[in-house]
Length: 631
Image (cartoon, rainbow, N blue to C red; front, top):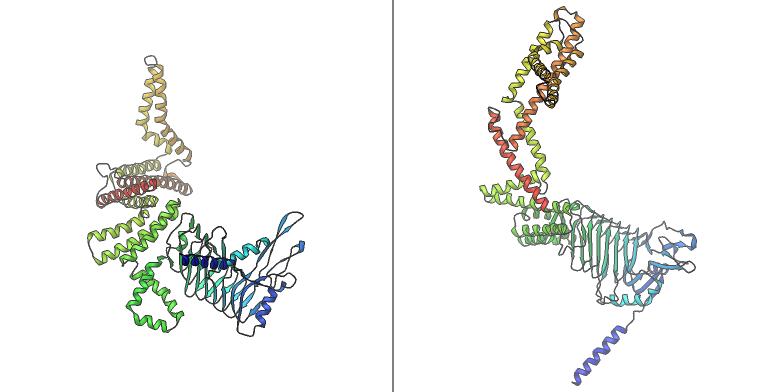
């Protein structure tokens, strides 16, 4: 019992001493900080537990911009400062922002100071437990490591909460902006502090930088706000972004040219944004959890997406099967090995050898895409959902093709080809309008074929053409005008209409008045066509007389007149023939039918084929449309 009491007392005393410890910070101005670096005789400059503050009296040469007094004058430094020493900074905080109040008007006045502005770092830079620093317009020619992996993070935060909160200093901000990296950069930030009542978000902002040559690793955990915006990643090797238990993650407007891009996010991220980026190479995605409050644009991938876990497994398989190759790569150096591991050749081999062929890899690829598909559907983003679904079906089609090559049969062949057909004609059932468009093409194609062959409907057209030539023959051989000859040909028909009218007029005492009134419109309608045609011919017939009696000049005008009328008549006949062909094609395609197909020869059998195509296409359209309506 005594031993337990002594142990508890010792534990209480140790805990009290542990939490009563205060970090002792030394404070320097920016000019003092850079002077210490310059005066350091060793090739490595080390500094621990320090706060670098901006001094308006001495630090203007090290500021990016700042305001002087109430006139808001901005000073920009134009020259570049070169640091030719390796920097090791541990728990060194660079205060970058302060808030001052105008006491008379109670208006806040913001004044920003940037300590690392236009700095050229020739040697490696290592920052440990630095939560406040801002790089702008810098050039890095050697490795950059920004790490916070110590449990002292909670003490650092407590210190700032207790001592600097009155100054409203925004110390929790690591900013890298408008800089150029010609070397490897590794950022590993994790917050071990677990008391959520005191913890506030820690910010990492990487904006408008250019990353050349080496790889980029960004790993943040536990309550970081991560913003990666507007950067150019031209890395030879991989670009890897890992996020876990962060509050907000934004990866937007970046360009990934020659990089192998891998992104992971998991657990309690409140909002994740990954959109409007441009990728030239395949992207390895390792999402463990796509949260509902996310904004992820599928079109940015350009369908160049692979499952990171499946590709890594494939690489390990290559290593195990080719130990000599692995050994030679390792002997070539870490850079060569990393480039081989994450290079384009391995990705291409995975796509050609494993993504479709290996059942496990295929399953992981489909699972990754279905996670996106369900995410887009849950967020009512049908446009991206349809794009993901089409990508899923494309991979499935390639899988069916592989299975057919491996085991040829009618079943495997049909599964493969029907998927190809569905993609072209309906976007795998997601675009019913495609079926209508292709149906129109089929109808027009068969209508053109029917136009080239005679059918029973064209007999009236032949009689009409012969009658037209007989009419003009009479006109050229007689003195009367065209309207007179036209009325002679219509005499029997017109006489019947006139007899009908005369009988009605004579019988006005024997028939009800309403009967006679209703009959007159019928007579006028019957005579309308003849009257209009006769009037048109009389108006256009400017040269009457027999052909042989006309002068050469009159004959030329007569030729123009007859040629024009014959051309109009021929175009009318062709229009009727084309309309008949189109009508036949539409009826055959929609399988309405006439009982007897009004065409002979080869087109008669083509009509049967068209009917089958129409049945198939309309079925696809109906199913696709129903699917869209249900969605």
